[in-house]
Length: 100
Image 1 (tube, one colour):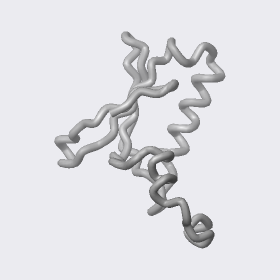
Image 2 (cartoon, rainbow, N blue to C red):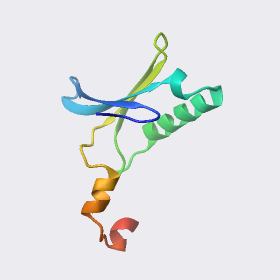
Image 3 (tube, rainbow, N blue to C red):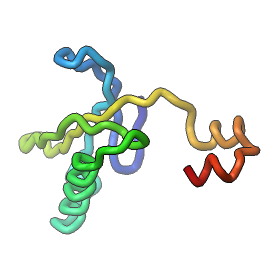
Image 4 (cartoon, one colour):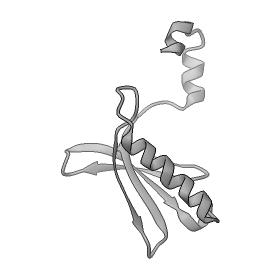
């Protein structure tokens, strides 16, 4: 689906749940050069795992591949425009929408 500075996101199908998901893969050696940076990643994923709110994406799981030095986590799939495209489509949004 896309590649950014920190991770690559793949569109995948979860056979157990029967839904499409977003498979996020971080190459540890390319991005994280210290144990503190890696701990920050693990902390963010741990936080995402424990958040439970209707407005937050669903976290399904995570794992490490030690041999190829990748950290993977699976989340709810969102098919949408980029932030820039959304901003261009909805230039005049009421402040109440932003606050909610």
